[in-house]
Image (cartoon, rainbow, N blue to C red; front, side, top):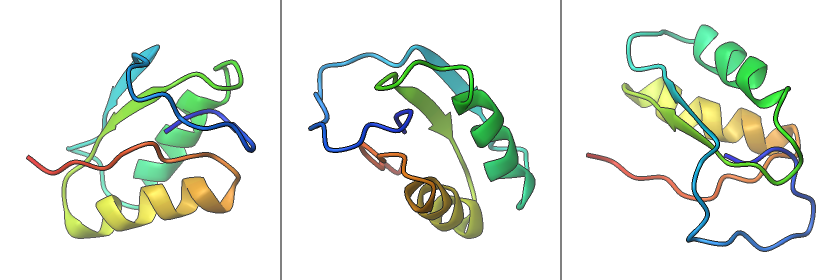
Length: 77
């Protein structure tokens, strides 16, 4: 996820400035914690978020987009 990056194309080679492991969290705390991690970041900064479970994997990116953040990629391991 990037901190509100309105209209700018994502650069795939950028590295995250922070990483957040939410694999042990449950909704709605997954997005609450992601949102709190995004707030101090500068515009355009990348935040890597680790999620597990169907609901968080769908909900966190969706909520981030609704608030104007760009989801750069989603990957499943």
